[in-house]
Image (cartoon, rainbow, N blue to C red; front, side, top):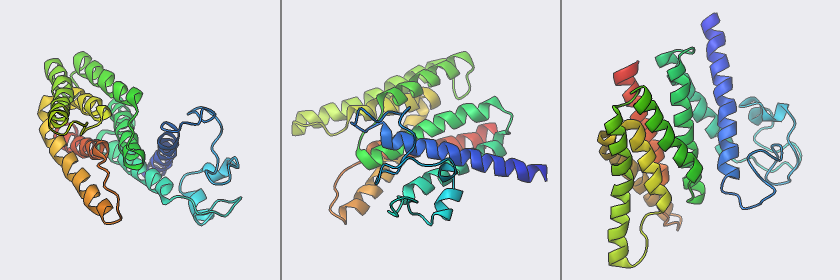
Length: 252
């Protein structure tokens, strides 16, 4: 019975963090100076009416409202529910693998949450948050230099340099040939941050997986006339998948 309560708690907590992720995805790239990550309180994007407390309960509110705003009856973007479910699933996996009371569970969860926010933000807006990428860089170096959680300190530094430098070099070559940027500078720092966490040896697999995901999105989007390449989306999801295998093989 206690295990059931623990699972319910973890799912609800994960859903709340997924809702928080949705807020960051919407607000971080927003140019409206009146909208920050701190204020105003959560509101309907369509009618701007402030949500009540029960309307912010993950999963329950979406289902109770039948996927529509309680004030203006406009459909709520399904991405809000998907974000809650995805983040809850990631937290549940970590708790089952490493334990609810393990500090490592929450450290990895925060890193994965940042990667998820970056990925979804890039998918929707083609923008990445530099502060979040810097948080990955600093976290990776601190965790590996101080505790060697994912790799040794030297490998963390090499991962940062190699991750950033590889995309920088590819973009420089593209610019020399086509006279225009081929990769956004935000992608350099994101892959550098990922490299600082998992080390230089992770760059190849994550870049391969990330490029494959990005190419798949490109093919699907092209059918509806969208030719944008959200590389950050692929890199973020690729790093999350890599972390799952890393945990399963090394920590669980």
